Image (cartoon, rainbow over all chains, first blue to last red; front, side):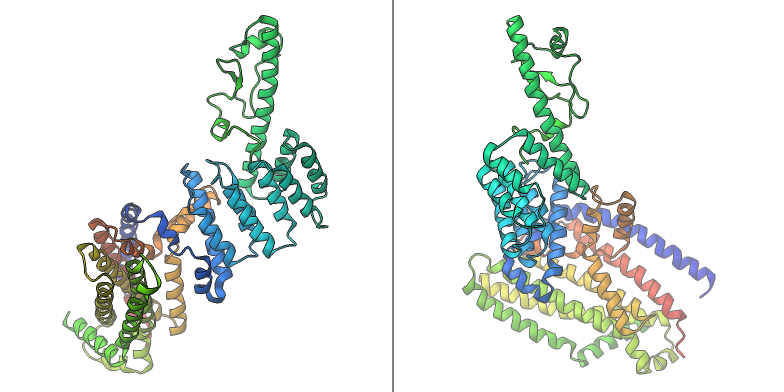
Length: 296
Length: 258
C-alpha cells in the first residue's frame, strides 16, 4: 500500500470515528426516551439470578454491586429521591455473594439514610444486615452497622445497645463498643454519643464519600448544638427585655453574644419570627437538614 | 460488484452446506416449549417471557455464528489453501473481504428472519392474535441483526492478523466491553479521578457501543421505539462496519500469504 493510501485510510478512520461520536450522542438522546429504569433489573428473583449465574455468581455479584453504586450515585447526583430499585438490587447482590461485605456496610447506609440522602428504609437495612450476620456471624462490623441503624434511624436504643454489645464480644471489635452499648442502654439518645459515633466513622473510613457524609453529619450535629445554645440565650434575652429577639444583632448588642455566630460552613445563624435560632437560608447545610440531625 | 456478489453467494452456500442453519431446529424447540409451558407456569407475563426469551435466543445463536464463523471466514480459506486459487482469479483482496462479510451477513439475515418468524408464531400461539404494537419486536430483531453485522466485521478484522483462537477472544472481549459503555460513561460522577473519567469517556465513544442495539426491555413491554433511533442505529452500524472493514481490508492487503 502506498503512503497515499495509508493517509487516505487514516483520514477515513478518523472521519469515521468522528461520525460515530456524533451519532452516539444522538442515539443517547433517543435511548433515554426508550429505556426505562426498570429495564436495569428485569429479573428480580435473586434465586433465579443465582441459578442463571452458574459458578460465576461471585463475579455477577461484583457487577451487581457496581450497578448499586452507580444507581445510588447517579440518583444522588441528579437529586432524585425515588430509590425503589435499591432494595431489589441489594437483595440480588447479597444472595449472589453473601460474603461481599461492602454490600452490607454501604448498602445499609444507602437504605437507612433518610430521604433525600438515602432511601429512608431502615427496616430493610436491618433485614440486609441480619442476612449478612447469618452468613458471616464473625463479622463484628455488621453488629456495629446494625447498632448504628437502630440508634440513628430507628431510635430503638435498646436494640442499638444490644447490637453493639453483641459485636463487642468479638475480640477484634472496637474497644469502646461495650462501653458505648452500656451508655446507650442508660441514656438513650445523646448528642455526645451521636458525635462520638460519627467522629469514629469520619476517622476510620477510607472512602471519600462516606467521609464527606460523616463530616456533614458532624456539621449538622454542631449546628443543632449551636441552635440550642442560641435559644437558651434568646430565652435569657426575653427574661431581660420582655420580648423575644428577632435579629441576631440584638443578642450581640445586649452583650449575651460577643459576635454573630456562624455554622460550620461560615454562614451566620438567623432568628425566626418566633425568635428561634435557625440555619441561614443560604447555607448548603440546610439542604441536608432533617428535623433530627442526629439521625444517620 | 459482481465479484463481491459471487464471493458472498458462495459464502452463504458454504454456510448452508456446513449445516449452520440447523440451529433453527434448536430455536424452534425452545420457542415451542416456552410457548406451551409459559402459559401454565406464569400469570400475566406470557408475552414478556416469550419476547425476552425469543430475542435472547436470536441474539445468542446469532452471536455464536457471527464470532465462530466470522473468524473462520479468512483463516479457513488460508488453512485449506483455497484462498490461493481464489486470488489467482481476477479477484482483489479487498473484494474477497467484502464478499465474505456480505455472505455471512446474508446467512445471518436468513437465519434471523427464520427465527423471527418462529418468535412471531410462538407469540401468536400465546396471544391468539398479533397487533400493530408487536412491530416493536421486529425492530428489536432488526437491531440484533445490526449488532451481528458489527460483530462479524470485528471478527473478520481480528482474523486478518492473528490466530483464530485469539481472534475469538478479542471479538468476545470487545463485545463484552461494548456492553458496558454506558457504565463507563456513568463513572464520571465524582467517584473517580477526573483525568481517568475523561479518558474513559473518550474510550467509551471509540468502543463499539452494543448497548445501542439493546431494546429488549422496550420490546418485551411493547413500548414505542422512535423512528430516529432506527435511522441512527442503522447509520451507526454502517459507519462502524465501514471503519472496521476498511482497516481489515488494509491489513489483509498487506498480509504475506506465502
